[in-house]
Image (cartoon, rainbow, N blue to C red):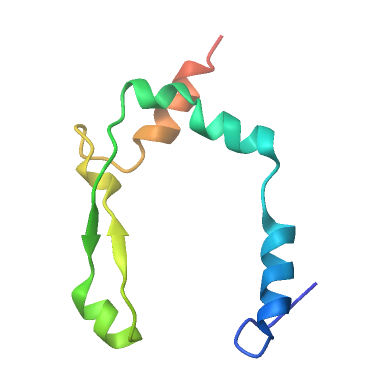
Length: 84
């Protein structure tokens, strides 16, 4: 189903969001992933110029601030953790 969120009513947006919710077991897998043993929670950084352009508050999640300076840490660790 294709819905333009710019022209839709709030009810249509809510219905679309409800359909897009992942299954609970998927969320549980994310929250219990072993990657949290090696990754740290990174801070949100205000994107001032983008916020001004969009007339909204925008924050960037800086995954490149991980100790290994890579945003690919989570995927790489997950791949290695599942090698037999």
